[in-house]
Length: 527
Ligand code: PNW
Image (cartoon, rainbow, N blue to C red; front, side):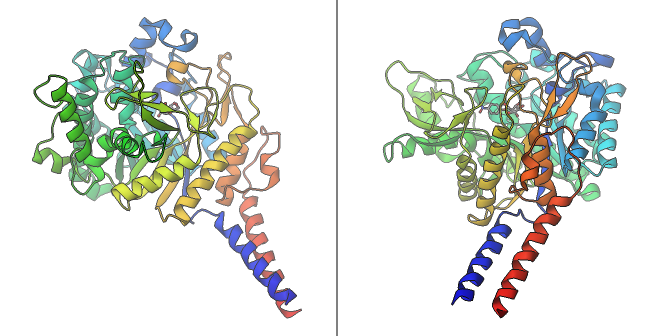
């Protein structure tokens, strides 16, 4: 009897160890974005971007009057960044290309040789270390010249973006096999124009978000179709966009269930449905809601511009995987008289609703991000239910910390999110191919300046050398990657972080542990 009991216990233990392992081909990465890390804002003929303009003309817009003029100086220190990525053992490094660094005027008439060389060097150095480059084409730094012509509210943006994409493919598609067209469309269109405090610094929440939304979908699709036509057969790469949404749940059940559904359709549906759904085009509920609302407001057509049938087909299916950035969650409820929130973060004028922080959420250095790890699993369940069985890639997830924080908090953050991810994979059967930590290194956190630190490498912004130092979470993440598990040996979470080395011991330790459990099981069986 005793041995049966021990046998069952040992088997359960072995299964549990196994359960904390990610699938064998699971990929781990880290991310950054050009304006946030590069600096060199006008180096070697780089053109001005909307973020350059915002930080130089409106000092009050950014915490501490900070700019990205130098940032982490990755324009000069890219070799160090690759060293760090290699020290972590990353499978891939996700970075973005600065549109005005390659095309100073935004258009293809003038291709900057220095800009081209910078990304060639970075890509080659990554590949030399066995790290795959994952390239974002647009992470918010639109060439100012194109903004002067209306930016994302001008339908021509889709042609401008396509010609920029054509230049990028011709330069880098031989080595870059994973492309992300646009980072967080909802921030580009809704968050920016609703709040007016991110570049381009325009507050126009009524028409602009919806024009931008439609043009952005077409721009993305044009870049996808171009690759499909001219490069896919040669290089067999993959393209998607990196969506982001708050996980929205009802504040009161059942009162707010319908509101939460509509909230999710606004939050993610307007950017995912045209690409990933079987029907294509806008989500039906949104189309209906926006038409009714617009007519009630005295417009004679919907503020949400329609797709033609041809456009619907053109956009549909333009993704080889589902890229998703997960940060935060909210609960939705009807607004009370006089309440009016900014869409995406604290409320929705369109839904006459407010967004509240869910119970149990915690905060780091910003109140924008209410941390709720279970939201990651729930989001993936929602996406799978709504859009079906795609390959999901977590393109960002990160902890907003402080300079000298106690970094076990960040380790717990990563562990808790990876745990939810693994539950989504194993229990909900969501196909998730990888996880990307935001960010490899501290950087310019947009309007938060340098006060909010997402890096697993600390950057000393007072030091002209911009010295990079691994945080304890860097050591932990290297162990996670080595062992393919979020549950690592104690030594991985102990200080000091500075001297961690990448010997692939943890994977072996874990394997030997499983072997040991099996040996005990067999031995006990014969006793
Ligand atoms: C992402 N929110 O944006 C961006 O892709 C990064 O550039 C940025 O540095 C990172 O997250 C951290 O903020 C977000 O309000 C913007 O929840 C806003 C939110 C989340 C992510």
